[in-house]
Length: 395
Image (cartoon, rainbow, N blue to C red; front, side, top):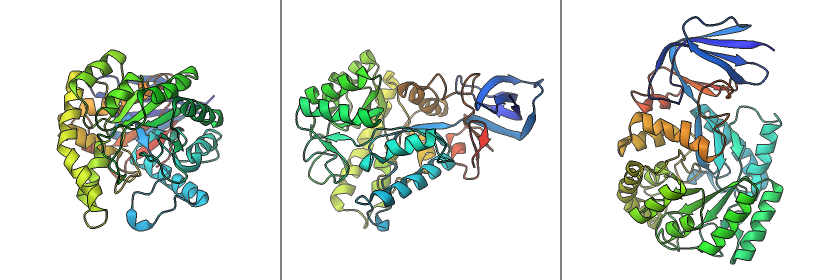
């Protein structure tokens, strides 16, 4: 067993609001896990890496991605082609890791491609990517937000949902995604249109929880948000119009909220003349409300996770650090923004025993930055930052 010592850096370990100066990490090269962490007087090791007085922080955990989607409308649509979509997915995974994202939860993938990619990554057959908690295809009502070719499982009763989720989990889905409301990107529905019913969503939750898996609900408006919470989903995705009654129930049930602010922000900012007017209007009309409501939910104590909806228009796979900046803009502290990843995302995905913070017995997934991320989360946007995965430099 050989070990590598990383030394001479300032550490934000993801557990507390402080920087530890003159820090070091000792990593087991065989497992990629941290064996010891400390400051001053580092131990002996087989190899030593001097990090030149820079800042080290945990790799980011992005809870909401769509790696087979294309964020650039001018590139054309490859949704009908499984080979092109798979190649695109691998490219997008590389971009995620280079941006600082070392673990993702996929929230809807055409052809169930993410399930296959996850297995290939775990087998070591694809390198320089985050690990994936895969969802496979999402679950939508007929005509709902998810009724696209090669994308949604179309279910129109509790029994159909139960069978579809069982089939999804049979092939490897670990994070079931259900569509509880309409959304920005579908022309004939709106954020406040309820779609899957509470009973349909509850069937998905029961089947997922039987397997120890989690359920995410696309839920932007009311009453769909409430329907999903009553069904006991693990996380509300977007939650733009979350209200006080829903916040109280989320706190009681320990439901997480993944805002994906950057997804809504990017459409009116970059889409003029390139996207349909109805899509830009829906996103622009929601932006102020979602910022206010997400900030309020955070202030009330709802556990906010880090997710971007990467793959939606102009929301490319490098944008995770921008989501942190937008959180700070609406009132989060820099520390609270970072904790959406280090603590809340890791706990939601049930990986917090091995990921999220830089402590003994956890994987050495970390970023090396020029500037202090606790002083400004914009430090994470550094383009040439070093990214380490299990103690090995990937970028």
